[in-house]
Length: 213
Ligand code: GRF
Image 1: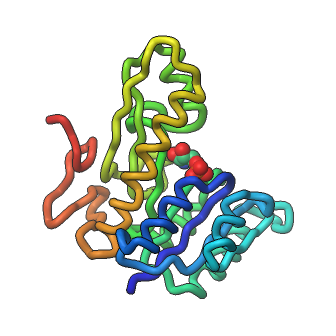
Image 2: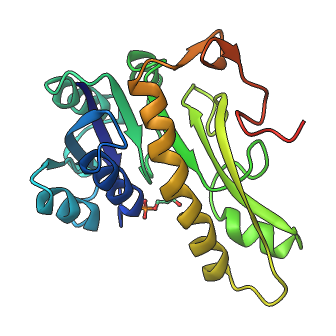
Image 3: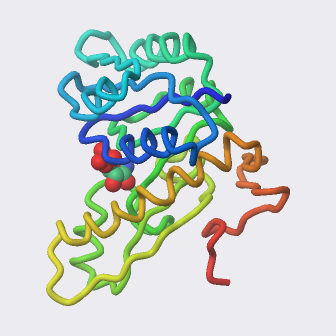
């Protein structure tokens, strides 16, 4: 069984989807541990409820981002992860961290990348009058929200939608696609080669597996 470690900062609804998928054997791996940079993250409770090791590291206890990430890497590596999954982890990673887990570090970002990297993506979609929004699972590289896309899910934006409506619509898709991609990875079907995502030996297009073109 492949070892999975998840990093969170908050609610952990994606973490919950991953916990559930592991329990239902939809992910062929073992969730070994959850780490948060916030001690009060609700996701840590979700992990404890599922009898998964839950750890918090507070940035204020460390002299620098590099020192924080060094400690985090050391603690993560005690679980011998085959894949490290960022699920709402709201802290910028040091280059050393990204390099250490290169090719086995996944993130989910709530936009149809390369559109809207960074924060407040749903609000931007709403303010720009976009008719669709979505979410992207991608490999993490040094470029913020810029690594190769593996899979995207699109959702419509309806007239009268609030930001919260869009967040919820996007998140329900996230809970479906993130476990799927993690399962591809732990089954050895998914790789990052030369800054491209490959699935079953095929180089994926820029929008990932479910591209329109
Ligand atoms: C998700 O929408 C994800 O795309 C973004 O942060 C959010 C985390 O939500 N990176 P949750 O903590 O999984 O509920």
